Image 1: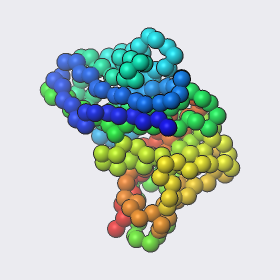
Image 2 (image 1 turned 90 degrees about the horizontal axis):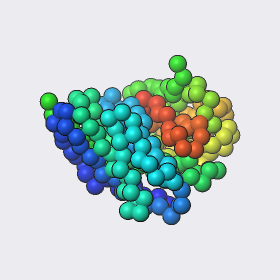
Image 3 (image 1 turned 90 degrees about the vertical axis):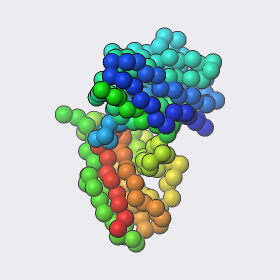
Image 4 (image 1 turned 60 degrees about the horizontal axis):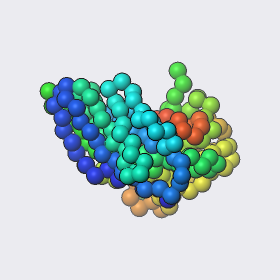
Length: 117
Length: 112
């Protein structure tokens, strides 16, 4: 079974600053996928970024990047030049790359990010 | 535009009643999922389906039932056996391993 832990229930950042959200996971699988989802006040879940565990290079999507440390089982999200629209709940999630019936995403409990003007 | 439609957005249920939440997708995705979201709990998997006419229980299936008669549709019934049904329910679908999920906009269920 996989578990995902987000140790920061809440974080805040000043507009235009950089913030890092933490995520650790536990899995017995040798290969897996990792994701960050954003849930703004509208409650629509939006995929922010994804990473395949066998790829060493950290994923980047515009102002969003990850720091993937496979040995430490850590997958943190860095948001650069924070904007007011980044305020949301952020969820870290994972599932194993074993195909078949295992497309089930396991989510952390989330980090609520506040962006201060 | 392709996407997932959940209806209704808000639903009120009297104690002892069954209610059905609708989830329809036009993305041609094979897999569909139902999650429940409670404050401070993250998202917990209720049921999932990889193919038409087949589905499996997730982590918190008790008090819920589903069907998958069509690829596009995956309705969730919250039965009277679910003791604490007030929550936000999210439906999702996926096309293939590695691409994550596409989510609907959710249904807020409240017991009155």
